Amino acid sequence: MIPFSILDLSPILEGSDAAQSFRNTLDLARHGERWGYQRFWLAEHHGMPGIASAATAVLIGHVAAGTSTIRVGAGGIMLPNHSPLVIAEQFGTLESLFPGRIDLGLGRAPGSDQTTARALRRNLASDADQFPQDVLELMDYFSVEQKRAVRAVPGAGLNVPIWILGSSLFGAQLAAALGVSYAFASHFAPAQMMQAIALYRATFQPSKRLAKPYVMLGFNVFAADTDEEAKLNATSMQQAFVNLRSGRPARLPPPVADYLSKIGPQEHALLDQVLPCSAIGSAATVKRQLQDFIARTGADELMITSQIFDHAARLRSYQITAEINAAEA
Image: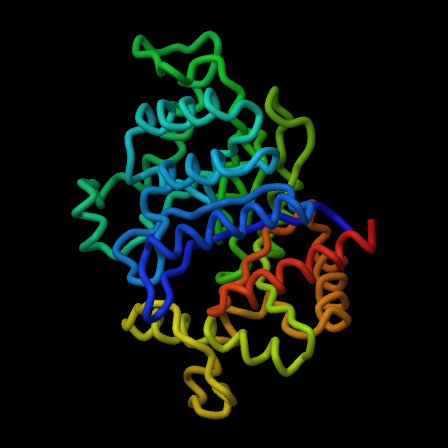
C-alpha cells in the first residue's frame, strides 16, 4: 500500500492517570517501530481530561529517547499558542538530540476552548490571522541564512520537516503556497477533505523543502480478530466524541455493548458527520476499507489513530493494520 504512521493522543482512561498514559504511549511507539510504521505523532491539546499530550515537545523527547528509528513528531503544535522562536528552539533541541527523526506539524487552532486559550496567554482576536506569518517566521529560524536578528540556538540550519495541518481549505492553500507537506484531519473533520486535497495538489508550488505535493490523511482504525470485537472496541471512541461535542469532555470510557442502539438520532448524526473516515472490523474487513479509502483519495500516507480503551486491544489493532500493509508491499 502506502506508508502508515501512528497518531497518538496519549489517551487518559477512565480509572487511570496520565502517568499510565505515558507508559502506554511509549509502549505503542516501540511496537509501532517494530511493526514498520513510518512515524509516531503526538498532538497538542489543552484542558482535555482525556488527553495527556499537552506538553507535546516534552513527550516527543520521551518517545524519541525510548525508540531508535521511527520518526517522532507533532501532529501538531498549535502555533498560535506559542512564540515561533520558542518552537524553533524546542524542535531544534529535539532535532539535535535525535537527528533525522523529528517532524513538526503546525496547526492554527488553539487545541482547546476559549477559556483555556486565554490561560495560554493568547490574543484571541488576532493570533489565528497571524498564522501564515508565524509559520514563515518559524521557517526562517531554521534557515541557514535567516533574515531576523534573533537566532534560534539550537535551530538555525537544522532540517526539521514542516507540515501544515488542517481540516479546511485554509491549510491546503497555505501548504501549497509554502511548498510543504499537508496533513488533513479527516479522522475527525472529513467534510472538506476531497476539496482540500484537490486544492493543495492543484496549487502546489515546489520549494527547497519539497519538490511535489505530499498528502497525509488521518484515518481511524479499529481492527480486531473478529468484526464483533472491533465494533465493541470502537464504542469507546464513539462515546468520547459524543461526550466532547455535547460539552462533556471526559476520560476515554470503556466500551459499551450495543452502544449505537442506545443513542438517539442526534448522536447518530454527529457520529456520521465526524467519523466516516474509519475502518472497523477484522483484518479482511479493515483491508477492504483501507484500500477503498486510499483509492478514493490518492493519499500518499495514512496517519492511523486507534482510540481503544484496552491497551492490549489497541496494540492488536495496530498490529493487524501493519500486517495488512506489509502483505500489500
